[in-house]
Length: 224
Image 1 (tube, helix red, strand yellow):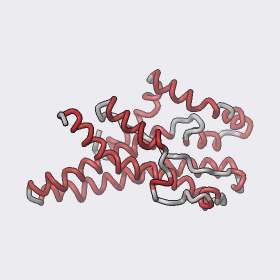
Image 2 (image 1 turned 90 degrees about the vertical axis):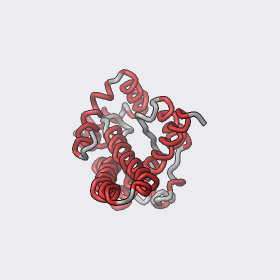
Image 3 (image 1 turned 90 degrees about the horizontal axis):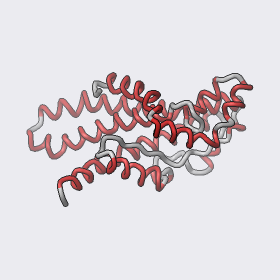
Image 4 (image 1 turned 45 degrees about the vertical axis):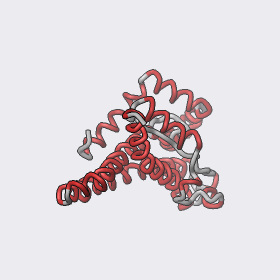
C-alpha cells in the first residue's frame, strides 16, 4: 500500500464513524419530533432506532462519502441516509409540524458538533498533554482526529440541509413559514429540488449560501 492509498484509508476510517452517527441522529430526530407532534409513521416502520443499518442508503451513506474523500483528497466529506417517512396529515397543523420536524435534523447536528467540540477541547486535548507520548500517539491522536472530523461533518451536514430548497430541510422549514398561498407555490418546485441543488453546487452558488454558516460555526468552535 503506497503512502497516498494509506492516507485515503486513514481518512475513511476517521470519517466513517462520525458520518454514521451524524446521519443516524439526523434522521432519527426527524422521526422522533414528528412522533411527538402526532405522526407515528417513522415509529411504526422501525425508523426510530439508533441502529445505523436501518438508515443506511447504499449511495448516500457509503459510496458518496468514499468518492468525495478520494476525489477531494479528504478535504470535503458529505453523506446522507434514507429519509425518515413523515405523514404531515397526522399533525394538528401540517405545515407547522413539518417545519418543526424538518428543523430537528440540522439542530441535532449542531448539538452533536457542540458535544464533539466540548469533548475535544476539555477532555481529549488536556489528556493528550498529560499522558505519555506513546499513549497520545496510539490512542488519543486517533480520537482527536475522529472528534475533529465529527465537528466538521456535523456542521457541514447541518449547513447543507438548511439550503432553502425543498426537499432539503431548509426548504421544508421555509414552506412552513411562508403564508399559505406562497407556500403552495413554493412547494411545487420540490420534484425539481435535487436538480436545483446540484446546479447550485456545480455553479458554486451553494458556497455563498452554506460557507458563511460553516465558517461561523467552525470559528465558534475554534476550528476555522
